[in-house]
Image (cartoon, rainbow, N blue to C red; front, side, top):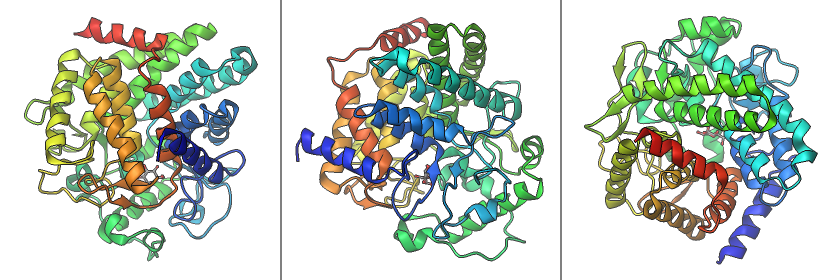
Length: 441
Ligand code: GLC
């Protein structure tokens, strides 16, 4: 294959998974709209149909809850081939949705789309509207999920987007399985069960859903009562970066209040992120708010934190940690280090490589000037699709394609890698972010 073939294939996958005003992550396994899938896919669309990318975000935000939350799944069409579907969530929304959220990458995506648009005037009204909606979502995070540190917690592993990460194992011991209504998993009939979470984990996922449902999806109560409350560094880095991107966009559009508030949110969280740093692991770690301890699990989330403008010294330490991963695997960046006892090469978020994570790490490293490492991550990502197709995720040792195939966000990231990482392209925001890095060093 060559670059032109890869691009044509990626576009075809995105078109195939397009359901008109939203895309499904892949046919069969995931028949609805997922939150961060859509935002990252919008970036992919921007390379061949920017307007369609904007529509992807608009459809997602049309399902924003009254209180500001943007749900992790929108069930646009009935489909009982997925569990848990709308009948289980029972969130009472006009278009049925799940009741939890996902990593807030929308602010970053929206700002990128606007920057890339040739005719900015034509999309200004729509951008302004989305800017307010994204801001409302960020305010929701700070209202319901932040403590005095300014960092936000997730209340369900699915919110992290890294469903079965080793990060959740200890906290999951606290989540009961009694009282979970009997259910039949559907994911394991679409994908190899060895590549998926275990039944034990699934029971706990559903216990939490039932618990939140019993609280009438009241977000204040959910935040108070969930036995699972984790501050995830990657998730927070995404929120910080999105807030800063939104602030920059708000400046451009003359929305001074959104700009000011977003910067206050981001600055506070960014300062507190340092509290999650671990010298022993050379990366950030999750923090368990219930036990008030750092979770001793060196997952990729603490590496992904480089997506936010963290201090230069931290960038260098993280780069070192990634180089160590490169010695233990053939393809960067494993979601859990192969040297760790819990590493499972093919099981979802316990080892495999995900191109969306590679992309966000590469963006952060690029902005911090780590050019060589960026090149290696980009090369590995392209090598994976060329060897194993546009899979959902891949084994970091043998490039085994795992999960679903013809995957939307994998395709979108390939388009991003080819366009955004062209060394000739240096955007203004990049230069600005570099300055932030310099300032913090
Ligand atoms: C899985 C992933 C999650 C993603 C979803 C749809 O649940 O863990 O991050 O959003 O699939 O692709």
